[in-house]
Length: 114
Length: 253
Length: 94
Image 1 (spheres, rainbow over the protein chains, first blue to last red):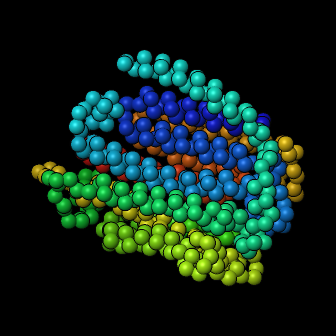
Image 2: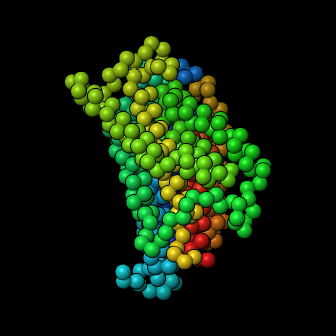
Image 3: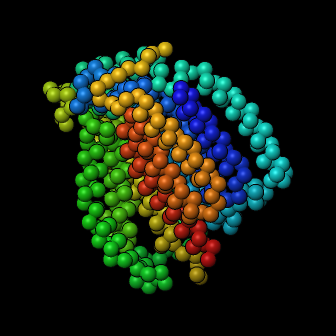
C-alpha cells in the first residue's frame, strides 16, 4: 500500500508519453499532454498524505487535529487552473497551423518548410 | 523512421525512464508516512497567525503569495497570447454578428436545454461569487470561483443566445476586468511596500473571529482579485474561440 | 517515519485504504482509455470522465480544494474549449 500510488503515477506518465509519440493528430497529442500533466497532480498529493488525518480546514474541527500537508495542495490547486489556460493556448496554435497548412498530422507538419 | 521503429525506440527509452523514476520514488518515505516538518508547523500556527481557518488559502495567498503572483501572470500571458494568435488573417472578412440558430441546417436549441441553461445561470453566478469571496473559511478560493463564474457565461451561449453573450462580454470589457484583477493583486503587494513592510505582507486588520468573512486581512481581498482575473481570462478564451467559429468566414464561402 | 495518526473525524484506515486503491486503479484505466481512443469527439468525452475520476481521487486524498478545481476545469472548461476547437477545424474542412 505504501507505494501503489507511485506505481500508478509512473504508469500514467508512460501511457501519456506513448500517446504523444505515436500520435497522428495534433488534437490527440494535446489531450495526451493533459494526461501527462495529471500524473504530476497525483504525485504531489501522494507525497503530502498522512495516514488517518483530515483535510487541513479547521472550520468545524478543533485546531490541533492532525491534518495532511497543505503546501502541496496549494501547489496542485493553482497548477490545475493555470495549465488549462496554457492548453487553450496550444489549441489556438493548432488552429493556426490548420489554417496555414491545411493538415493536423505531426508527420506532415514536420516535413513542411514554411 | 517508420512508425514501428519509432514505437520500438520509444519502448526502449520508456523502460529506462520508468526504471529510474520508480527507483527514485521508492526512496521516498512511502505513501502516508509524511515526515517533513513544514506541513505540521503550518497546520499548527496558521489559524493563530492569520485568523483564517482555510490553511490552504493562507499558504496560497500569504505564506507563498509571491508564487501565486507568478502563476496568475502565467494565466494573464496565456489569455493575451490566445487573443493575439487568433487574430483575423488577411483575406477573411468580418460578418456582422447574426444569431445563427435561425437559418442553419442543424436544429435550433431545444426548449428543455434553453430553460435549464437560463434557470441555472443565476445560481451559478451566486455560487461562483460566494466561492471567490470565502477563501479563508472553506475549501474555496479565487481560482475555483473564477472558473465557475466563467461557466455561467458559457451557459448563456449554450441556450442559443450568442448575440447576448457577445453583448454582455465584449472584448474590451473582459480585457479591462482581467487587467484590474491582475493589477489589483500586484497593487495589494505594492501598497504593503508603501507602508514600509515587505512585499505582500498582511497589513489589514485581522478581525476577531477566525473564519469570519471579514477576517484574515489581505487574504480575502487577494482572493477576490484573483477570482476576477481568472473569470475574465476564461471568458476571453471562450469568447475568442466562439468568434473564430461563428463570425469569421473565408472570402467567397 | 511517522506512525499513522488517528482522529475521531475520519473513517477507519482500512476502509480508506481500500477506497484509495480502487480509485487509483480506475484512474489508471481511465488514462489508458483516454490515450487509446483515436476519434476526436469520443476522446474529449473520455477526458471529461477522466476529470471526474481524478476529482474523486483527490477527494479520497483529503484535498477538497483541488477537487473543486479539477472538477470545474477538467470536466467543464477544458472539454468546452476542446469542442469549440474541433468545431472550428471541422468547419474549415467542409
